[in-house]
Structure formats: C-alpha cells, structure tokens
Length: 303
Length: 303
Image (cartoon, rainbow over all chains, first blue to last red; front, side, top):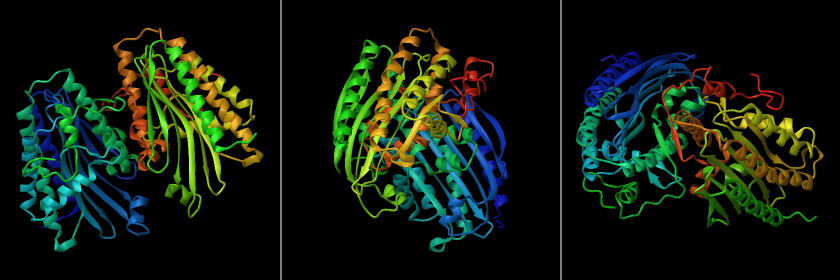
C-alpha cells in the first residue's frame, strides 16, 4: 500500500462523511451545516456544525488539511531550521441536550514535514455530567478492544496518557472519565507507518457506534432544573479545560487558525458559581469525587 | 514618608474595605461574603464575593498579599538567579444583571523582590454589552482626569496599553471600550516611588465613584430576552479573554494560586453560538463594530 498524505486526507474526509451520516441517523432530527474555508498560507477545511438536534444541542465534526511553513515552536522543539508541514485530521466535540448523555470528544490527525518527519495523534474521551459507572466501563471496554487489536500495551499506555492530558491542574480534577490519548506515534518501538495508520483508522471508525450507544441508552432519561444547572457547571469546566489547558486549542488560536472552527468545542451555555462544592453524598458530589486520574473504569470505579 | 511594603498592603486592604462599602451602598441590596485564605508558600488573601445583588449579579473584590521564592519565569525574565518576592494588590470584576450596565474590571498591585527591584501595575477597563458612546466618553474622561493629575502622558500611554492588553487576538476585537493599563511602573523617566504610588492610589480611589455612576445611570433601563442573550454572548468573550489571554489569570493558575479567587472574574452564565455575526445595522452589530483599538472615546467614537 502506498500511504501518501493525500490518501490519509482523503480517508479522513470520508470518515467525516460517515460520522456525520451516522450522527444524523442517531439523533433523528438534527443535521449538519457545512462551511468550507481556506487558509491563507495553504489548505483549508470543512467545518460541519450540528443544528436542530433532538439529542445533540451543539457540536461539530470538522475536517481540515492544511500546509505551509512549519510553525516556529514546532521547528524549535524539533531543533530544525525550516521545513514545510502538512497536517490533516478530524475533530469532534458534541454537547447533548440531556444532562444524562455525556459530552464526547474525538480527534484523529496526521502530521508530516518536508524533511521526512511524520506522526499520528488522536484520541477519544468522555465527559459525563453525571458519571454512570456502567457507561464508563462500557466506553473503556470498547476502546480497549480497538487498542488490543493493534498492540497489547496501547490501551494501558493511552488510557494513562488521556488521564494526564485531560486534566484541569487548577481544579485538581480530570475533565471526565478519560479514554485514550496518543501523540507523535511514528516508528518508535519497531512500529511501521501502516500499522500506526490502521490503528488510527480503527479509532476513527469506533467513534460513531460508541456514541450512538450512549445517545440511545440515555437520551430518554428524565431530568429537571437541578440536572440542567449541574450540566452547565460541568460545561464551565469543559470551557476551562479547552481554553486554559488544551494544546490543540491554544496552538490553533496562537497560529491564526479559523476561530469559529476551533471554538465549535465550546458549549451552548456554561455557568459559574463562586466556590461550589456539591454535597459529597449527592449525585453531583459522587461524580465530582470520581474526577480523578488512575481509575480502573473497566473493572469498577471504586475510588 | 516611609513607604514600606507593609504600608502599601495596609492601604490596599483599606481600599478593599472602602470599595466594598461603596458597592454595597450603590447596589442597595447585595452584600459581600468573605473568605480568608492562606498560601502555603507565604501570605494569603481576603476574597470577597458579592451575593444577592439588586444590580450586580456576580463579582468579587479581592485583596491579597503573598510572598515567597520568586516564580522561575519572573527570575528568568529579569535574568536573576534567585530572590524572594512580595506582591500585594486589589482585583475587582463585576458582572451586572442588566445588560445595559457594563462589566467592569479594576486592578492595582505592587511587587517587590529582596534584591531591591520593585514596581507598580494596574488598570481599569470597561466592557459594555451594549456600547453607549456617552458612557464610554465619560468613563475615559474620568480616567484622563486621574492620569492628568500625575503626568501629561499617562492617559494616552496607558489608554493605548489597555487597547493592546485587553484584546482578543483570535477574534480581532477588543474586550470592550478599554480604559487604562500599566505595568512595571518604577523609576523610569525620572519618576520616584512616592509619585508612582500616589498615582496608583488615585486609580484605586477612582473606581467606586466611576462604577456607581454607571450603575445608577443604567440599572433601570429596560431589557428583554434579546438583550440577555447578547449579554451572555459578550460574557462568553469575557471568558475567552480571561482564560486565553489574560496574563494575570494564566500566571495565577500556573503557579498554584487560589483558583476560586482567580476565577471569580468569570460570569454567572455565558453562551456560545457557532459563527454568530449580528446584523451590522442592529444595536448588537453597532457594538461589535466598535470593539476596536485606537478609538478616541473622549472626543467621539466614530469608527
């Protein structure tokens, strides 16, 4: 197989189509609005945002393939004088209406430079407003299966990476129940490019069925003003993570990316209260206590 | 006058008291809740958050005086190996209920190190949800008066500094109508410490009357769902500025400051819509068009 950057970008574009179709079907009412954009320095993207959803309130499934001179901070990190880069990927964040349906995020990406350096990155992580241990276990089992197909250490390595990455240091809490995260996957440890690519493809393909299951299972659960208020507090933490800690967001905003595509990840509404600490015995407090690194969600979330 | 760090901290603490009293009087209903906190490495603060306001929905007036080993990034910027620091100041952000009343921010601060380096910093800036040219002009005139009392170049220098500082690069828009901002004011250009301190004191004292005027003038204006929605959109931009660009917030969160005191600046509620562009002829669009650097608010806000 001849794996070129064009092949990869084409496959990602097809993945975006597939995921959009599957999400429209799972939601049953909403549809995607598409904006095509071009980047001054080269390349562009297809931003697709969800509107009028029955289950999904706000979100997007974005594809981009951009190229041009490599940003200075990457050159510096790699100790390079100059090189052109090419980057392509699919990024998703979905904020559901019902607080019993979790927020989800997925990203798969490929990066290469004209000097021959290349890598894959990505991940999927889940942010329940209310943690359901059964859902969290199911979610992690699905990711484990995807990982195990490719390498026995992938799940444990990338699960730990997600715990460390999706972490609000200033709150000493994780964003949600984690998932998997990986970056700069290349030929380390004897992997070849095709095997890395097949793994990334499987992560991309796993997304829609995983979220379809969570939508279907939870969107009919009842909720009221209390659950909506807590949802908005948790969404506030999502905003804090994305704007303070998320390297992709920061990189995009710093380097003149398309702001509306980058910030499609922000929720429709977020609330902040001063010094809110839910009663540890309440359902909100129980969720708060589980926002920790290192939980074995598959075997049971006792903390 | 013997101007010690203890004198300065004591004066700032008194300023916090005065401002809280004046704000309670202007609001007529709400009151401040106080939390005292200690910093592990030395010092602490008095966080005061406003609750049950008739005019102010959420906000805080914080005092702190902290000390300990100087953070590595400051040492590096000053090319120093080591020194202990002392920092004290008052920080305020107020989010009003009525979208016709602007958000306001004020900060005055003093920093010194055991090697003899010291400086003052601070500023006041205004973020109207709907820009009222008369209010913006009045606000800037008040600041100009405070500045002119001390130096003929202060207002124009610090007004420009505020335009540059309170700027959302990723939106290419200012946070609001600006105000004044200054940092590292020491003995440059022949100033002495007492004259800098007197200026900072006057900035601190100007805050409460300036905001009392804006509260009184605007809190009775009518508004509906449309104005509230726009208020929440503008509050979203406030969140973006504080979490992405504000150096004080970033520094505090990075160095383990008290998160709830730092993030008291966040609004009670913020909304995000994908790719919202108000009609340029609407009142919202008119405000959007004026979120630019370099406007001479005093003589008229024609852009």
